[in-house]
Image (cartoon, rainbow, N blue to C red; front, side, top):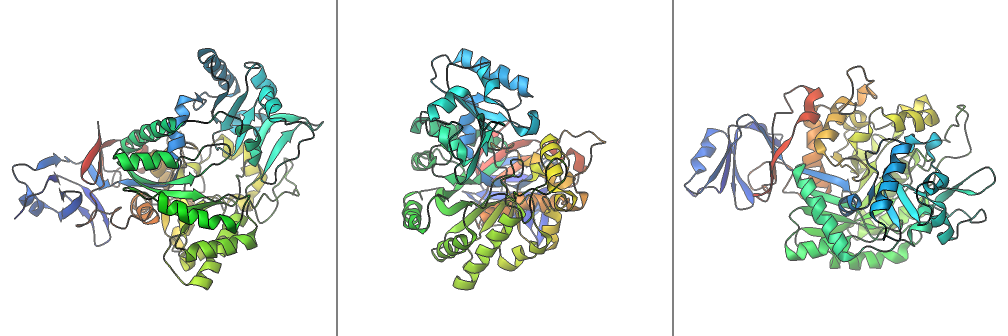
Length: 545
C-alpha cells in the first residue's frame, strides 16, 4: 500500500459530502485527497508522511469567493486609504496626512469612505478643498459606485454647471446646478479617466499582496468580477496572466470579462478572443460580467416601483437599467450559446427580474447548457421571482456581510424603500427554501474578504461586533451554519467552475483550511471569532500562523 504525503487526524473534518458530512481523518497524496474517514486513514501514514494532529480543530474545504476584485483590493491600501477613518473629520485628516507625506504625487486617489458619514450620503468638494486645493483629489466610496472630487479635479475634467449627466450616472449639483463634487456611477469616469495609470508592476504587486491576505483568510480560489477597464480603473488581466505564467498565482482564479455597457453585441467576438488569450494554468476567463444596475443608497439600483423621498412619498425615480432589457436578453442568449457564464450585478428587484428574464430567454433558445449563470448582490428580490432561480438553474450569489443593521442600511436605505420592499432584502433563507443554489462572495474591497465574518452575518443577521441588544435584520432569512458554509465552499466552487473542489472527497483537490475551532457545533454568535490556522491549495501549504 502506498503512503500519503499528508494526513490530518484527530478531527473533526467537515467534508461537505451529503453522504458523509463528518469524518475525523483525511489523507492527501500529491495535489488530491486520497482518503476520508476515521482511524483506517492512519494506515496511509509512512516515514515521509507529514501528520497534522487537528486536536479538535476543524478541517473544512477551502473557501472560495464568487465575487471579488482582488487586484484592486491589493492595490488600494497603497493609495489614500480611508477605510476605518471613522467619520467626515477623520476622512479629511487622513487626506491631509496622505497629501503631506506624498508631496510629489500629481493626483491623490484612494477611497473607502462611507456614505452614511455625510448628510444625505453626499460629501462636498469644498470639504476636500479645505485640506487639498492645489492638487486634484478623487476618492471612491466604499461601495465603489461613486466618487468624491475636489474643485481642482472637477476643473481639470471640465465639469461645470453646463455638463450633462452621462447616461449611466449622475453629477450631484447644488440648488444652482453647480457640481458639488459627488459623482455617481458612470459620472466618476469623467474625472477618473484623467488619473495617471498604474503600471503592470503595480497591478502584479497588488495581486500578490491580495493573494497573501486571501490565503490567510482561508480562500483558495475566487472569481474576479471585473476584468477590463471600468470607471477609470485599469484592466487587471495582465497581472493574473503574468502570475499564472510565472507560477506565483497559487489560487485558482476565474475571471469575469467586463461587458462595456456603452457598446452592444459587436464586442462579443472580442470577448471570445480574450477568453482564449487569458486562460493559462490556474487562471481562466470564461465568465462575462454585466452590471445591470447600481446601488440603493444613491437610488440607481433598478426597482420595480419608485424610491420614496424623505417624507415617505413616491418619487419619479425607480433606478437605472444600464443595459436595455430587450437587448440584455439577446446578448445573454448569444453569450450562453458560446458557453460563457454570465455574472450579473443585479441589486434591485427590477434588475434581478431583468437578469432572470435574460437567462430564461437563453434557456428557451439554447436549451440547458450548464453555464452556471449567477446573479450577485440580490439586495431586493421580489417574492414572485424567488422560485425562478431553481427553475432556471440561476445561482444566487450572496454577499452576507451586507445583511445587517448598520448606519448605511438604517439611514440611507430603509427610509427610501418602504416597509414592504425593505422586507425583501437579502432573502437568503427564502432562496434556500425555494430551492436556489447559494454561492457566496465578499465584493472586496467594498467589504471585508473574511469568509468567517460573512458566515457570522449569514447565520446571525447581525454584524460581528454587534452588541447583545442589537436588532436582528430580518431573522427569518438566517441560514444554519452548515448551509452558509456550503455556500462559501461547494457553492462558490461550483460557480467558479471547479467541479473537483469545494468538498472533501477522495479524488478531489486538496484545497483545505484548518480552523481553530468547530464553528458548526459551537455557539453561532462566536463564528466571527474563529481564525484560520492553515490553508492548503492542491496539498501545498500557502498559509500558516
